[in-house]
Image (tube, rainbow, N blue to C red; front, side, top):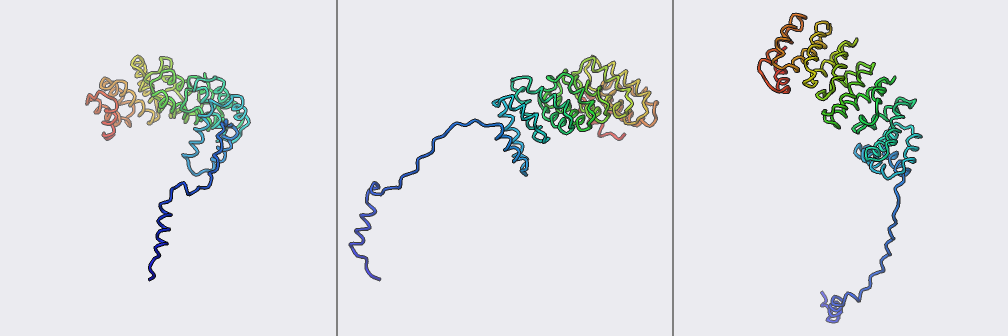
Length: 325
């Protein structure tokens, strides 16, 4: 192998030790100046329309949230016009939710009223239903007057079911089941309905611990409904009324039990009588035992549980589930 030349080694060393300034980098391109731009409604709607075809539900939820969050900075007339000319149900729901968000954020009431008008008056039941969904988990119950009573009389089963879902969801998740006016609105809507399934859905899940005396009387009248399903759900709702209404509720339930013919409705009445009285309901249940021999095992099971003198309803319910009817 040839021996390296001393001159070659010297040249390499000098190259390595040369100052960095001797090396000239190519000039960098000048960065473009940033310009402030305004987010347009048309741009947002185009993005949402394109995103509706995504397989990612999280991405679609993000787009809806983006429009709601942007709504407070968008001109109201522009947002209303886009809502009124839209006929795609998914887009109608997004735009309606954006309008509702403006009112929820303390801006004009008219934004939510635009949604109310379409929920009540659009000729397409699918678009009415979409507008109703947009008001879910908001303060619409307190801002929309008798809207829910009118929705429960809507000719479309889809609209009635969406309204019922709003009433149940909002009472539980927005008001925590502890807001009397919200519960009263749900009772009024249920009473206005001619749809037993929707009525039962509301009353069967409604927390009634804060209802007014008028609402308690409404529930008692609903025990006389032609629908056994409604009588059962009204019985369940009466089981949770405030202390001041308990005596009247127990009396109404006992009277209806004697006239009742449907086993499921009678079962709901027995449970609510137990809930309203705890151990003090035992004599009353025993008096009802011979009204319908088929229900005697049910009454006996509740009597055994109430004799344990448990002081909380969830504990009583749990003990009842462990009993054989």
